[in-house]
Image 1 (cartoon, rainbow over the protein chains, first blue to last red):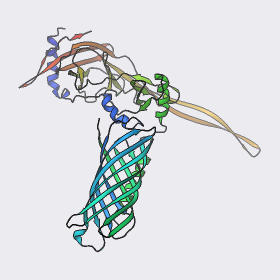
Image 2 (cartoon, each protein chain N blue to C red):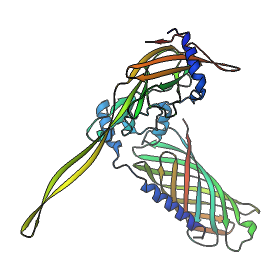
Image 3 (tube, each protein chain N blue to C red):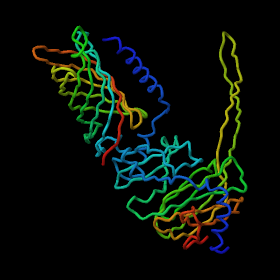
Image 4 (cartoon, helix red, strand yellow):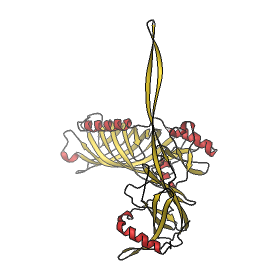
Length: 202
Length: 256
């Protein structure tokens, strides 16, 4: 059959079912996918991970100070090859917390910025990756409606697990030291959160 | 702890328990596979992981096996291991097609397989791109084309479609069990039943085509499957115009 006639034959059948040809182009390259794969292997992560998440924070001691905070956090993590899965990360998170007790309503809402670092060891079981680590950081708060300021540091331990390569659930307990003019708090706290890996950067 | 925290903690614990219960795999092939791959590649410190789903490797005959990617010894290989092969078998290296890199000149190939007859429970389609690997997929349930990028170069492609059959075997066997009760021995016959399902393919039809793919061009290939060793291929090049797509001949097209 002549090559010139083939398009005509094809046109005849294809024009009846043009929708059959209107399909997306499917792409796959292993080296693109390897970034995701490598990220879950010990000692082979050479790519930073950018994650965003939300956390729920609550003091474990009810002292009419903090009641809760809810905010987002982002982190940039680079795994280091130390033979085990060991991650060091810096993070920054922002959020709001609210004071309880009989303080004026205006002083109750604070905007919080918290920077810190953390280290964690990871181990896998099936498709779950568990992690256990410690962290510490410094936070600074600004009251929304007045000049009240607090600042302080916190340290703690956290544990959690990741499902697949994207979502992480974590529980964190720690101590929070906070100061505002002549007032001091030193409280244990509990934080639960979820984080999603946005992307891995080459 | 304040009141609003409690429902959230309960929600979180519920999520955690549900995720933990979702562990389904009865065993973990990764460590066994790593040992096997080290033996196969001939060096130590090979790492093995499960890659994400590959749209080019949807083989209906090997859905029950595990795809792995291994790297080490200066190589990256894709492997397919059957679930029990990781215990006492070996993995088979796969040569799965990969798209051209974004900086490489490329064309687009659309393959539409039209079935004028079929047998078995499914058709297994394979597109072997010479020197580049192969795409394996089941027959599209909507009979739509499958589009993928190819290198803009003279390309030889083998298209094939093979019917898949299912064999169901019912097994029945009997064992005897003797128990002692008091001064008596009681012998019981126990019936056992099992069913095994085996999928296999038989040769259908295959044809090879040669195409001189040009950068940026889009080609339509129709693979007409009429039965065992009865198939043909036609090719057209899409040329977009203001009134729609016009189909012209494929440069350098030959059916080998």
